Length: 77
Image (cartoon, rainbow, N blue to C red; front, side, top):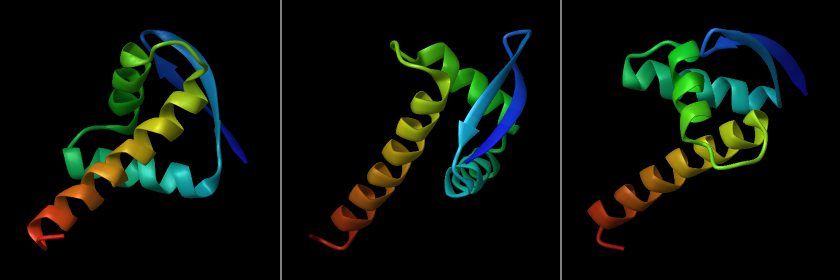
């Protein structure tokens, strides 16, 4: 578990994630052409309860589920 500080909506907060989630989050931000900070701010703004670390994990999971679903539909599965 890696705890990092990040500024979201003008306030400093910490997010604790496993390395795999940090790497995936950085990859998603890069794919979208945005900074890690702006992606986390977007996730924070859209979360419905729970803590920010959980919201980030769910966002990463949802991203890869959508990607897998798109790949499956292209393959005709």
